[in-house]
Length: 112
Image (cartoon, rainbow, N blue to C red; front, side, top):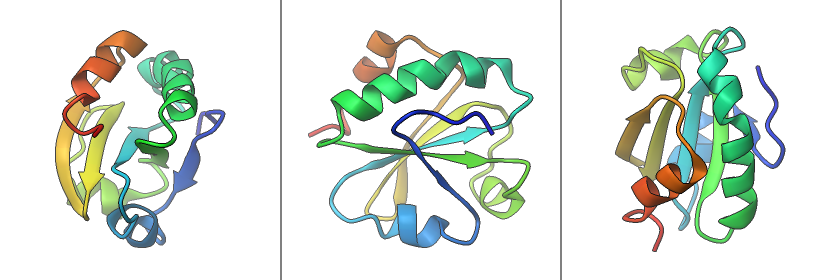
């Protein structure tokens, strides 16, 4: 899995604790894979957003090849899929790499 500065990894085993029971902050999960060029492309964007918005959102990544249970549960078919969870429920889903400005605009309604 592509390691992203400032972004933790989650697995099938700890997804419930780390994402679904995360508390107040929304959690953006990047469903990713080593073989995915757009995942490498969005890595610096996610790192920057994780740093700049750390008081408003938590960003984690999940390797789809190593964690098929969670990947299947949320119907993830394309990488990267960015899914935002709040209070244990998915509230937004986006597919594909995007620029930082675009991602922040798309996250405005969950960053309060």
